[in-house]
Length: 224
Image (cartoon, one colour):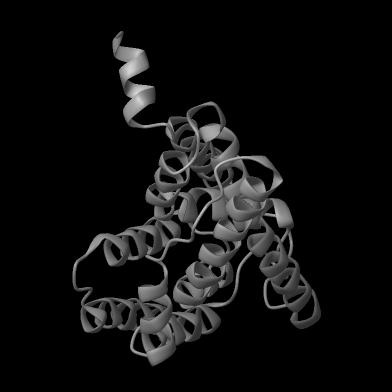
């Protein structure tokens, strides 16, 4: 077996990693060139989701591939991402409508007080019972049929289920990134926090809460 075939065998979600890297590259280019649009476009949102949220579901993609027949493993992962993206799209539509109505990002990003408030909400969300339940639910799996349309349905439902719990768990972090105008440092920090929570045996909510509170304080210091 060649090295490339062995890599694909052990890591069938390699193409998802490439997709995630491409999203981060595009986000970095947009941030570096300061080509921010007014408000919140669905393109910005979906790029942010691809960059920030895909690393959180690599394990689920591997589960979908492992529990599917070998010839349809990539189809299973695509179906999972379709269900996951469905949640992302609905959330993006709701947020873009909210931003349009409130005009909070009329100049490409929220004012410092709004960013500080979003970070404060994210810090408080880390300690909420709903957050803890959603984080625990992010590790669940569902039975997958081996073949036919039932297999596709199960994979889409699997992605939809994980997508819902992911966004409930990361709601505060995602909101802070949106209000910050898709700031690259903010997105990288949020992704690191979310990934650490996902892989940690016992996530320390107080530690991430304190870190987010300090970031909120730094934003308030800018106002003063």
